[in-house]
Image (cartoon, rainbow, N blue to C red):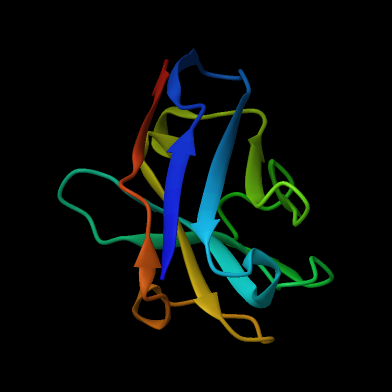
Length: 124
């Protein structure tokens, strides 16, 4: 079992930056692939970015490519999502997710462990 807790969300103006953190506890964090997903009101939960257990492989949704960076620090059991040039359409609840495995996983259904989510609001 892995417990995940997100932090770092909030309200920011368009063009601003935020860094989300996801602290994991429980089993060996380094054996888990991690992902960030987001869900806006009335919409499905969509992938934002994912990272392999080693950090060597990352994936970004087209909508955030070049603006967001996912990274992890296995010594601190933490994964990060650095967000730059934020847009109002980035407004959503952001969730981190974890699953065991050495691959890259793009779909919410592939992740059994989830944080409670954190609100990010970008004002225009």
